[in-house]
Image 1 (cartoon, each protein chain N blue to C red):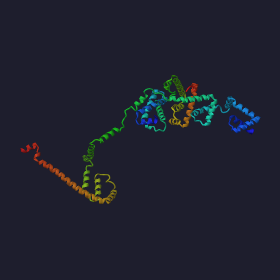
Image 2: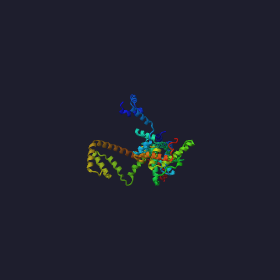
Image 3: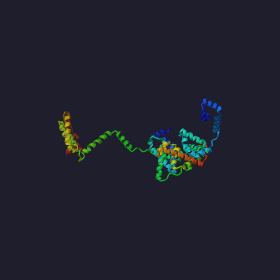
Image 4: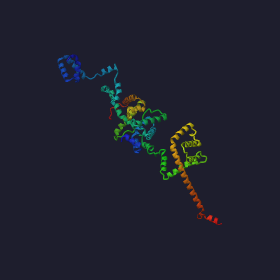
Length: 187
Length: 292
């Protein structure tokens, strides 16, 4: 079922459609709030607030950009608002490795490689500068387009483009330093 | 073939870029010209020899420096397919010769494929249920006006609503007029007076209206006298013929009504008096009183 149909059903009060929408996006919303808020409980609470706000404002999505970009913008704004209220600084590092539950393959060896690669990536991302890390999070990790990232961050398109390139190069250099064989291993 | 152009022709011959006719002509020339044969051999040896990387590096070091920084800066766009043809060709040529940049390119590609792994983090058990408990499973609140609208709808569809509505309307009309000290107490008398004493001419009616409004202390009557006079002139002129007909018929009708009503009242009154004098209607107590 495409997202437009799902949204339309939710607007009409279809509880099943709403549950499907929440399940489809819970992980990505939590990943964004978890990125900004170092505390897992705070991030979970904010992520739930995002969905509650979404439920009350389903009609507010006008369709100008993708639903995912709109939802992630809500998540980011909510997390930053919570940070301001907590008067805390953004985390210097990202999510703790053990909290990542990513793999879904039945093969233990593949799972191990999968987890190792993810941990390495997480370490590399954590070493990026804050500005580059945020652009990388939104564009490379969550797959938003350059235009969507620019609008979300309130930056010119050229700035986002150059930050994205610098972030990727910086990440590659860090990964090479941490594990020179990263680029040559099995995919 | 002139030997002045031999360098380009020989180079093209090695690269295989000559048309068949030109190639044949060049080969025939090589058979005849020893200088060109020597040059051709040198060019062939040079194309087959491995590149002198040290020479290239030393030249670059003394000129613009290594091109790795430039190549690496273009690698993300190369991966995205966003480079123009020239830049892409130049970067590819550099990658063919630079292992360090090749390694960076491979890491970039691997990272690009792997970063989406971090896009989703499981928030843990109970997250979805928590959201649903606070959204779709929450008892839905009715909009504020809904109970009121429901009440009105039920009220209007009751069987006796017409009677009840008339009763309420009558109270609303009667109470303001009949209440002690009400400023509208004189209104019925004024209305009756106007109807019973219907003027024969519109001018009289207009003056009567103006006087009634003044009597009721209406602000309209206190308006400009000139405005009233001019309005009165217009009304009189336009309605005198109609008015006289209406006033005549109105007077006649009122006479009929008053006669009929008076007859009815009299008949009711006489009926009551005859009942009072009928012995069959006496109460037991009254019999005993009469018989004393």
